Length: 457
Image (cartoon, rainbow, N blue to C red):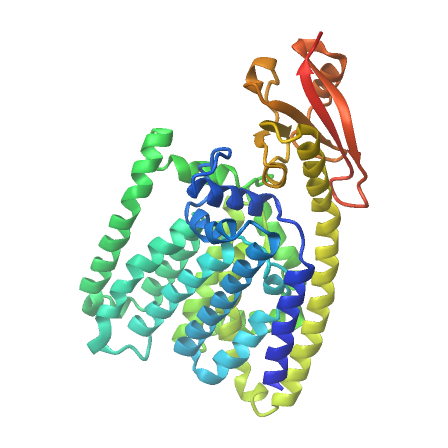
């Protein structure tokens, strides 16, 4: 039954990649970052975006930049994360719990929905979960004093997670604090390798600090920008999301396991359960206060709690493998349907951006060009024009001799109706003339109108 689930999972991932969706806003920005890394003339990579994602995206850009190339890398990152989840669960809870727990995690909606999207969460989770696995093996009940120097790997693993996703610093801190609380008695005998790990992490952070000082004037400037860009509506809106919708984005089986993991942590069923529960709760609170809520932000706490939950109920589950596998299969089927519906909606939304980018490219006729929009990254990636994010003043002298266009979405963000009215009337020295219109098709952004910008006469 497990082999059947694995085979079905592989088929679903391939089908999702082929059916796919256009690159989303964040994905297009990482694609542009990869292009910049390869020396192409694209807009500047935003400071709050992790530089590690440029490296991850670059191979897909070098391979031609087709959507499927990015999807292939995303799936590879998802599978690597699932492998890291198995590694952590095996070291923390044993082989049986790891096998079941990994299947539960892999088939949850939170994982499957993002499995083909090139986002930093999965690659960062690979390093964070490896970090947690090293901590458990080095400080946990089965720690081997003869191998304590393996703890030095915590330094490079933390650095890698940070460079792939700056927000990883929150979950890394939560995991570290939890380990210090649960296993504080073992710190003295492992102090030297832990100090070495901290020094390695500090040395690895030097390039980031230098870059941040040069770009912002502050060692913490980039991190502050990343926190500001997280887009929370108010302090704690992420917590409201996690408290109210957690079972929806987990799916029924993963949700049951998470609850079991929380219970196991509260009653201190084991040291590792207490470690996983404390780390997860602290991480969710930190992330919920710092940023808006998204399921992909808390994928590591989900995995930690699922592992603890499966370990707590394994005595009931393992003697009934067909029942357990059947329940997971039913949950996975629901996940596939929900993912297909979500992808269809993304196609309707992002397809408008792709079509508008095609209209811009056709209107430019091969000439150097730039495109203004509130949601610019997909337009720049698919059109090949230089992208400019609105709201900004649009002046003729800013065109730099390039053909200039404005893409206006019916339900777009960062758009000023007053500015559009001025442009269409030719005020402020620039005139906007409609050259194409893209129907919405029911997407979240609605339709789009493409305007050519020119000097008003």
